[in-house]
Image (cartoon, rainbow, N blue to C red; front, side):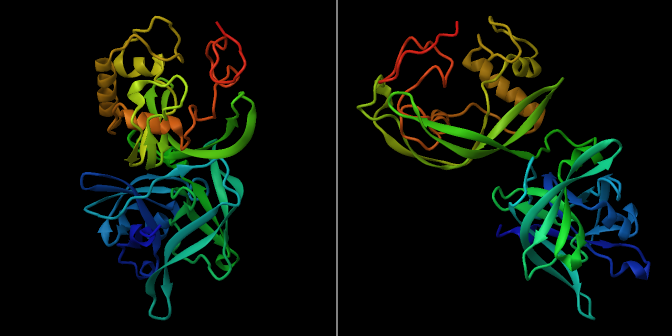
Length: 378
């Protein structure tokens, strides 16, 4: 969060109307292509500065690419040339109540009306909904910490979820002299900007349980986890879910006393990896068909894993997926694959010392370690 203030832009009016001289707003960048930067702010900020032809971003003329209704989806997308600011990542959460946020915005100070920028912390409150054209998106209550307050000029400020570091919403309104406010979800972006390039995406947060079993395959612990992911639209209702894998260091390979280990799993050695993304599931036949235009699988089924593909086919799939999305896709390295599978564990399986057919779909007549025989779902 150290670069929050550096990522904020000032929105002012280019109008000769003297009444617009004291009108300011806030915005932030979320995507950049070549020399062109895409930003978000509020629709009412555009209206306040005198309309679409009068928008300045850090004193640079801006183009309004998409805009919602002030009384509905109070959001606007701007495009600016030759603007160099750090980018924010957008994130969508189904629930955010009691999570901590941070935002920063501009305001006018004193009789001289100096333009200042200040950071504000707080907690997300109750979720509401904004409606426009028979659609709805989430709007979050903002409960500002004591001693802080939102001010006029904060409209359009990014509201950052402190756990993920992503922008969950855009500040739109304030109440109770700035002690409370509202933030509209970034999900409104796609609704006000139908022409949004497919390369632009926002992240989601998924909650799930992780269990641990003992040597007999009996559950001994269940804990809650969260993972950040984004989706790629491959067309015709087919999507690809990509999960964020945090960077870190792990011990690659297996110990010499691990059952059914292979010789190639030695020697164990430390490997450090940078953050990366990996598909949530094996590539399905529908996903392969969407990118490659064919399905070579023997065991047909759209949601089944694609098979009968070579390494060269898989590399070509990544190449064509990269061309379609504008992102750089590749096969995971051996260390990335093992790191993701281990999920910060050192046991033979990420869920513990053994495997059972209650956890994994395999031939449970064959056992590992001290586990009992299980089912075989032929």
